[in-house]
Image (cartoon, rainbow, N blue to C red; front, side, top):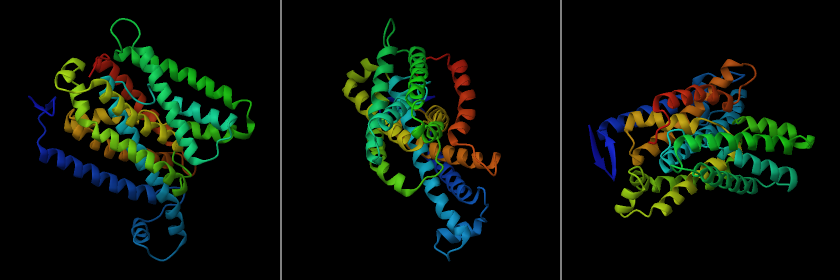
Length: 343
């Protein structure tokens, strides 16, 4: 059964069911935060974690905790940002395969940052972020333009193929930029994997305003995304300014994935997996889908970071590798199940 709410047909999801799921996800995130602070090369007992968070005496364990807290915060905001950007891109393109990684947007941001670092001497954190957002925007426009060529316009399959081809080309360009520069190669190659290790609040504060603005734009675009889900003609008939709505929503999503890539490197598949899972919980209404995607994305990336620390102890596996292990099979499942139809 379905009903129409806010201009989009949605599955019946009683408000109390949605709120219950929200509380469940919030509780799961809280448990994952404690696990993220406790687990690592040195295990910190949970009571010590709680004592340290409440401001107890200084000990070695608490020194470890102070290092892990920024890492956990970065995982939360990065996961939320990537998940919301993926949900918005899926809504804008009506493409079930849309994801900043699959569409080549993350790699566009990566190439811009690496080029700026190698040839223009980027050193300021804010400049990294601006350059990454610019690279993400150029890549997004390019992929959408290529995917729109030919008969049928920007179909899901054409966009996915254009994104995959663009990503492969951009990876080659990044490698070409790095190879002659041994002075930056090691740091850039580590950053290219995508991770939250070595996080500090000095890295987080510069990116926070960009993520806040991008998140606000995406959340304010929820009603417009509901209208776009009905098709451009119907949305225009409902009074929606289609081009403006699509452009604003895309701008918010580009800001989120570009700024996140600048600080974490390219992390894939979060924006693909999370929105599909959240639709099962709350339906396709973006007014609910976007907040749920933020919470679920944060939980997924924190969990991936914890898993990466456990399976390779005493060393670590970056979250970008863990999310790839989760997301690649899910990508294949979506292709087979949806047969790359539009949302």
